Image (cartoon, rainbow, N blue to C red; front, side, top):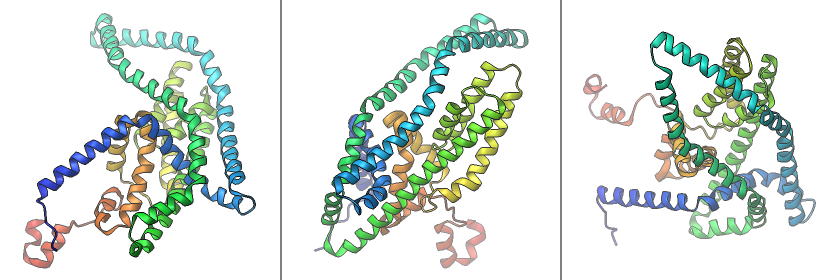
Length: 366
């Protein structure tokens, strides 16, 4: 029996409506899905350690020991940053006073050279602050919501590791038996690529954070460890994160130091670190199987921020990387996998088709 072929406009409308419904559900259930998404990535990352321990003990003790190891590592990082955060909190009044002094000098400079009165400048700044209050409140709310739910992430990780066999059996049984070999290959390659990709991102973050901290310590910038770690974490957000990572130490250096040599040194140092990261660290540490191009990276980061705030920005790239892995291994979805990737073809398909059919029109079309 022949299947009915629906027109393109009808199929595209149904797909678009489905995407809208999916985004609405993801946005509505963000409070539940955000910690679950983080827990899924962590569980995949910790699975090799859990498997290694499971060969030496039963499942539940292996999972508990795996979680304790992860918590100790994460807790050690937080403890290292705590002193820096405390010092930063104590210095806020001094920083505010210095910032107000710099702002007054800037206002006088603008008044002298551009003729804009201080009243107009103050009105502009007030308007900008008022417009940013909603965004700031939304950001703080997202952070607090994530922190309040972070206690459930270890529970999710434990359950995912405990029920991983059940979940895998479900994925096998969803598809027909004749496709079991393809399903097994996709699951195996996806797990391997995700583990190497997420682990590579974490190693890259540690290396970049270390380089940032060393550079800031040499330049004498306050809160070097805190700013260096934030820069390494923000570096996980391609392109956008790098700009914010440079802006933060430049702002602190402007407030805490006289002159502009330190700010210039920070910019030069961070640009060198970015060059080393892009050309040495990232190609060798992060999985080469999952490379997302710049256009898709920026779009999905902005979409992730619109959907789930700061958490969505950090989750967007790994999630798209997972989709790319799956797309690359399913024939019908391979074009989408190529669209997400960073391999740019020299000729598009239309030129190749025309060349095979009408060789004389090559120059006219190109």
